[in-house]
Length: 457
Image (cartoon, rainbow, N blue to C red; front, side, top):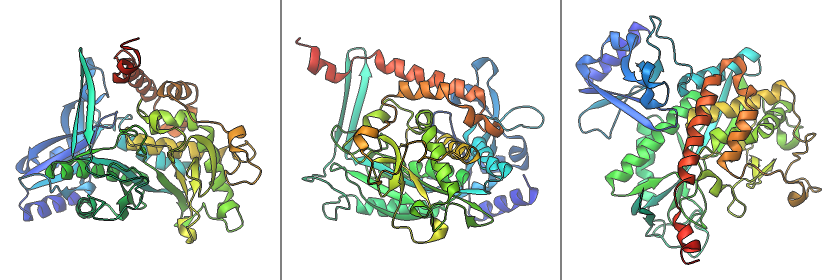
């Protein structure tokens, strides 16, 4: 931490009348936590030494050895509009309590940094670029619960459409002004927005599409976008959910990720003569992602609800393939891109129930593995989904059908994540443990629909 940077941030905050500094950090599962300190406690020592916290409550450490520190990232300082008192938001990363305040190797922000550094170490590129699509539902009411003798959920949307609601217009799109307000708040946080619109789901599904940034910044923006949406909804008496499949027989929510790599500012995915104007590097990147797609699902689709979305018939990607303009393929190459500097691929399976830093870093490491090993997706049989000879039903290799299957795949295929010490083995083991516990908790509970099926049998 540069002393001059701290002095600058503190001086600017004082001029704005800041009274509190709020440090936000993501736990292993992807849930946001925060702590606030009075502005007069925001000192150079805090930025050097960090603030102590219980790492076990973040899923990072065992209770018997849980002391850790949060170190603020001064480069993320921005005024938080959702606090009543003038408050400065900053992201903070987890560090150990040794004299060097060593970065904790399972913290998502540190993993994002290491993943992008691996590109430079291997010599493939120097920067990855990510353009996220945030899909979500807005409900006027939402209630749910589960205990010994009761299990239920109930959601209410005042929107009604006869069918596909994609790009529905006001006054039938009830929440276009809400999305305007969210995008205004995103701009205040420094988050670029490409556009927003009503999505396919006929009971209040929406999308905000972001713009390209590096891996760590994209993770930060994803966390803040959730924060902005939940807080803005709360102010309006609404509920927002990113659940992959909150409604039966309605479109699910994805976290589609457009991506490309650059070296010295040049897009290394572009080749005018390649398939869909993609370079060999880009095709190998695609090959790596498709090779490891099952294992990736453990991080990109890390909830039991995720696999209720990954089913045919709802524009959800279900098949291990790629192609131009195909929204049913795992990887789509947008055919409307004319700028070579924006030549890209879109990975469509991810949803927003997990940790965005781990999700994006895992995808990048899979793509990097494909480049290093020169994996040709066409030679492997994952030929483009738009190929005339392809019989998609006969040749299909489906993505995992359950979280159980994805976790088994990760357990058997995670060496690509360990390259350059990006993902520690201990995190993989901890992730498998946490997610298998989630599956067990779901499986032990009666499901409401089971009563419909079996109660009077």
